[in-house]
Length: 435
Ligand code: UGA
Image (cartoon, rainbow, N blue to C red; front, side, top):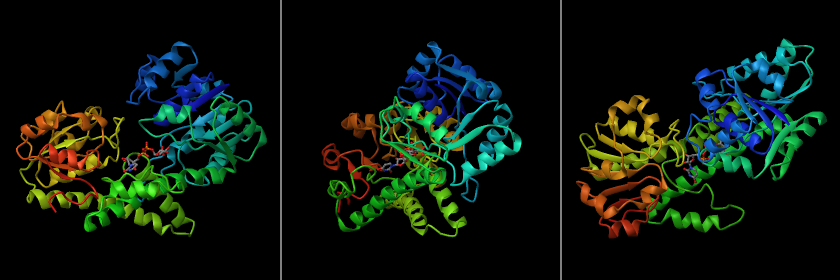
């Protein structure tokens, strides 16, 4: 099928590339000329495992094209996906100006029947607004609006798209639904077709539920610390219940990234606006904030004054397998330690170039390996659970450090093994080996 994707960011680019990979003819539109030039060379502006190869192969095969010309893009596709950013406003609501702009821009370019699909994460009832806008700017245009939320995770985006758990779309038109089903036929996955409003809600409700699971186990981790229990065993024990499941029960510094913090805030705002305040989610946010504060408090307890303390931070991205540092808890941690006068040397396998662009980037030292970061440090903090951190030579690291204190903010390491290597280990919800 001929498909158009407006917006070549994380979701747009990965979706477009995977659609091309299964044989669709895809044209991606982006108003950033430099980005389009990069993509036309088969290079990608982000780090995402497996994506570059798919982009390169499909550009070479002619199934994946890029343009800055919106009318050209709209003319190409029978179905036009909107995948532009929906950033947060300061009050937590969603800024929909990019969605509205795309609706205005594509309207006059619709010369024959099109399905306009919203893939960006948007508040419920945005689909109605998109349809109204297109109608206002092009009263004769023949089109249907569909909501098709995306459930990919950064770091495993290609796999999530190629082998999804489920495909959800909301449509109020049989004609549009038939085309959507055809697009997704090559992806063998359970399909749920709903009305537009329900599909929009599914996205916010799914992300909020996952965040709730994380905050739940983080709240339990605080109780484990106070009662000398081990949150890893508790998570295993409750996760063995099929109704609960072990996924997203990893206690740590809390959730970050470009989705959860924004989407939970948006869902809270939407429910307030609808007159049905979602207080449970306010608690989820509160627990998430407390998790980082409690961790910093534990660091203070151990190191006393943080000023002039040399601390190594391993991991800066908001999770492993990505270079994304947007709303990264690791970055927030570094900012808070720097504000208290700590001298931070940090290492991340992929995100260091991104950190250089941040304000805090100029206030810390970036090292080229975990060992180099640990040299002369009074403590090492694991802030992001990159698997390579578990495989360093810990005896060598201990020798390099001024004092062998290890704060594991993601429970990546085994406390007993770390003790054997001579470390004073502090994890999350694992009590303290000293106690
Ligand atoms: C999330 C959802 O998982 C996707 O399904 C969704 O499509 C996406 O948002 C989106 O809305 O676009 P993502 O933000 O890429 O994906 O990453 P996650 O793997 O969900 O992790 C989010 C945060 O939660 C990370 O900071 C991670 O460290 C944290 N987390 C995750 C935990 O602290 N504990 C866990 O058990 C799992």
